[in-house]
Image 1 (tube, rainbow, N blue to C red):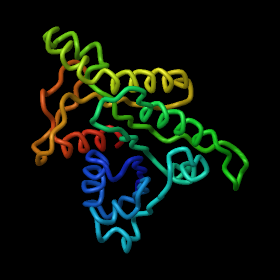
Image 2 (spheres, one colour):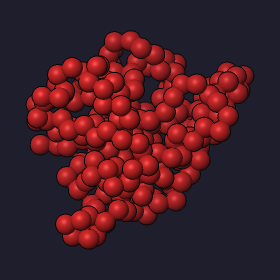
Image 3 (cartoon, rainbow, N blue to C red):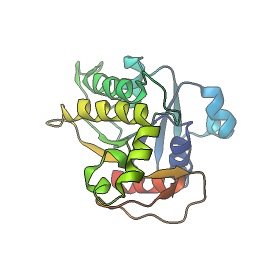
Length: 211
């Protein structure tokens, strides 16, 4: 019975992950959110679901985050972010730093660091040079300029996580444009990207990587 943690479970990607994972009764899900009430408004039946545990708090609550991604977790989906590009964004960086801190947080039962789960981290195709090489330069420039603060934040977060690659098992998911649409099917690839991908298709791909 696999156990998954979703950091940012009430966002578009997070709720798509939750919806798909709930379809398998063998899954155990730990949902980390800043607002439990928002999550329950989206999923009214969660509170009575024994396969789901909700962690409500800020991302810098390291003890709480550590308990969410405890040793029984097989994979952690880190899907925190926002669609607005504003100066000084640190959402991705703060998520990466809190994640590493939580993984290093001592297990109260053994007073040692916990077993490291597989991390599936949501990034962007704009940071993947193999994908960018196949895209028109003008299009890349327009997109990267419009969302420059988001990409700067993601780039620094990726760099921070790569500093810990000797012990951290991280897979960066780099989709193209994301849209609210139904699930239509996905393909995992490292050198090209669909122009627009639905959140449920992204979630399905992330779950496939986690498995």
